[in-house]
Length: 454
Image (cartoon, rainbow, N blue to C red; front, side, top):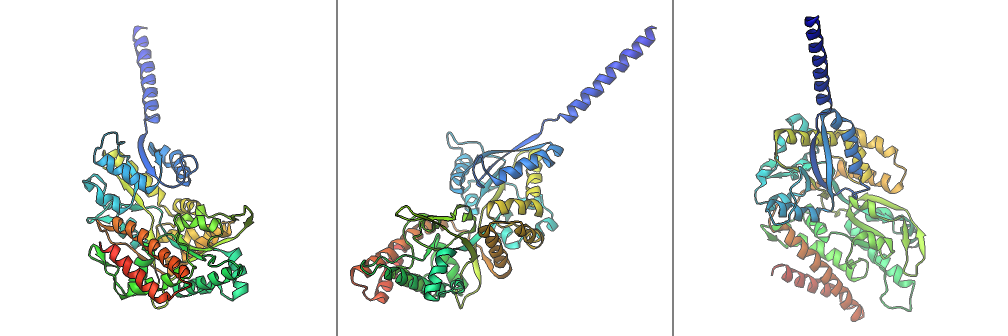
């Protein structure tokens, strides 16, 4: 009996130990990786939705939990990353994954704190990406910024008002395919709107607004075989002067919106009806125009590929940040990679980008998943955007800006000075009863060049 009791006790203890072992294995604490991103808001975010999906499926299976600790904008995250990397007082700890442009990596005191994705992605896996999207993420020979959603510049058109303008003047949507045609249309639009109030002098409306004149000049010059940069400064070669002349003429005649703010604002108020802006800004284009007298009108916004110069190459700015992963433990690094590989799988990637207004990052996603996803889009604004994306990907060359320490400073000064000089030219033109426009264009260019060379 004593032996039987001993055997029984051993069996019971073994049973409970086995149960404890199973409980421990099944309830293994997940590896938590933190992330800072820019896609949507803290509450309403298409990326957060995908993260929840990952956590409940692959994350649950592999004991990985992705936790969003900040949803902000790229400028704020840029500042937070640098503050943390420089160990500034009160700075937050770096997350495991954060959104970044190469400029952030270049500004880090030590970029070796970041994972080189070439150590975690095979050559076959990397070959699945659009090559130029990967190229932008290589800093100092290491792939440290992984593309997960890219944007470019797209032309947005208030089709409702443009159709009225077209019927009255004969200007067509296809005239907007080139910069030459667009600027000529902008001049005609200024005359058309000005003529509607003959008793009021100089109240022409601007047809067109560009969110980033720095990009317009940079891509425009490079696409026409010119050089935009000369080392760390601007080249100001003949291609630049032509790019300036076309824009300045339309602006001085009143066809270009030159005030501050984003293009979405002037289209929302009817102060302009055509814009070139980041394709991701589609989220902020309203389907209603509200006029200064508080009346409103329902409109249709359509998207088209970015205009090009008649004698230039089809080239467009590549935009959109990527994800950097911070070195930590092998387990956390692998968890970060598992999530990122899941996110760039064509099906998941297209599900994400079509909700956020971005482009997918792999060839398979563009060729197979995206065309099918477009069929499900009910909004004209979004379906035309993704048609424009596909046209752009097939027919345009993506321009990758150079990695210059001075790039950001040049960009900020450029934007301010371009708008200032063109607005001064417009005022002088009106104040002098539409004086010689060629001289105004030349004078404003000389002043702009002098300011940029200081």
